[in-house]
Length: 399
Image 1 (tube, one colour):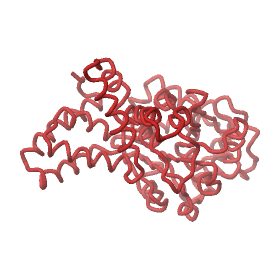
Image 2 (cartoon, helix red, strand yellow):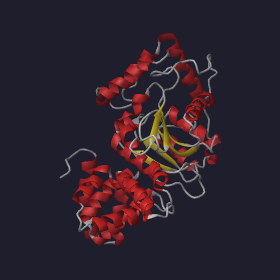
Image 3 (cartoon, one colour):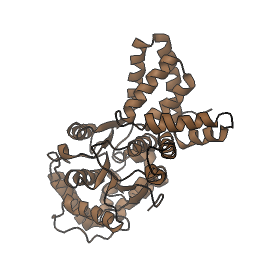
Image 4 (spheres, one colour):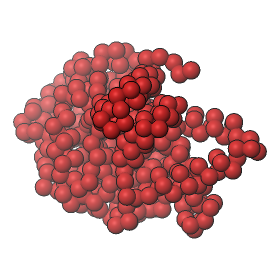
């Protein structure tokens, strides 16, 4: 468990063959405002192998039931959920068949149908005969690029696969072989974010698009230069998209557990509540570092203006349910290009990444501004945004 005890609950589900460690790149950021619970699949990490039926009888229902038991043990009637691959399929199952339990959903590198069952049965047979260690050499290039495999986290995840219980791993393969949630997707009502790596050979982008097209109102984010464990290979863009998604208010027709700021701030119509909500959203969109710098620079002369921004811009306008964070980023970028507000444009380019826009989508927004704001304005915008994107990707330092 991580995060504030009174934070809104968030459960993180892993990929087959990994452990709690697969969520290390995003854990600290998600735990700033959420009470985060990670779990291991049966026979993985520190989890016992016993919860799954043997002999190929395991199903997704069995894995989903373990998640509900974990939530029940903590008194969580509703929770947000994010899962990778098999963990993502568990989330789809929960959101479709237990809609009263899941408030928001994020599905990473996953599928509603993992292809024909035969390859999964063959993999289960390989593991039963030779152990999970036989799969380790083939994971580099599938899970992530070779250079990631050489990092401490990459090595730890490969070790997790080697140490997984053979029988439990084979049982999870049986659950994947039997998984077909395609007919269930339209029943999902939780606000849903679907993320995929464009180079994922296990669940390619077409699988993510199938989910996003079928789940009402789902958002889709494709991450360039990422294979199956997209959050490990590209932790920055994935973390930004998750922060933006889980910080968004629920739509009026989707009941959910109260967000942490509202729970601490009381009546959402008070200045104190707007300030609390605005601070949380401002941090999620602009990043903690920017907000901390702004606070450190606040003087008696500027404090009322900073409070106005927090309460009104962030606590009211950015908190309205009529547009998604992604849509608000598109509008904001366009307005900043039109107004020539270059410092703010760089800031909100990075914010757009946190809200789930890809660099390619940001380029499309700027290309649109060339038509309606003028080519010189768009020319300057591409230069500024390009620099901001390189900084966000770690290619050059921020000033």
